[in-house]
Image (cartoon, rainbow over the protein chains, first blue to last red):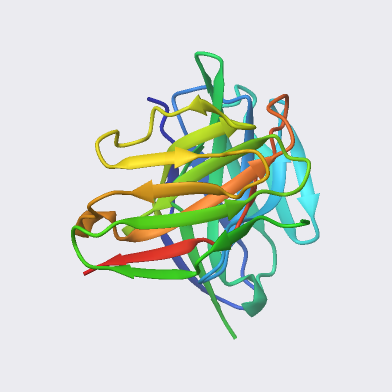
Length: 113
Length: 115
């Protein structure tokens, strides 16, 4: 069974601070996706990284896929209260011809004004 | 439609009752996935379909859970004789294909409360 360890589980910071969320695994994933989930809603895809070493930027968010495609990080620069939410990483695992998303447990981010 | 539509939004059942959840995937998407999100935000994969065929059911508790995706109908997830531990938010997602990035788009979920 492929597992994704996501850390930290909770993060409370002040507006303007930087933060990094990590997802680590001993398994290789075809791709890794980052989602953001608001209360009462489904996860919304932020980005997909596919190639080892890939870096993608989405405004103040920077996503990186590890060279070996086993880990990923999300870095937020100058966090704002609007960034508050649950961030989930999910790796695309291929087993026996089937593909499914393996989710980390999420990071609940609170950005205080 | 342009988004994954799940109904109902909330469902309350007494222990032992049946629960049925529905999901309409995005038009043109061939794959449908069901996930269960329990306390502490853990997502558990349940089952996936390729059109009306079961693609992967390795996450399904076989005794009480069943799912279908029939042509021209919303997909459904049914739980017979619900138990307290079935209380969770059930998410449906759809994707266009399984190659490469396999981007899954999620519905807003159905919150099932078993009392």
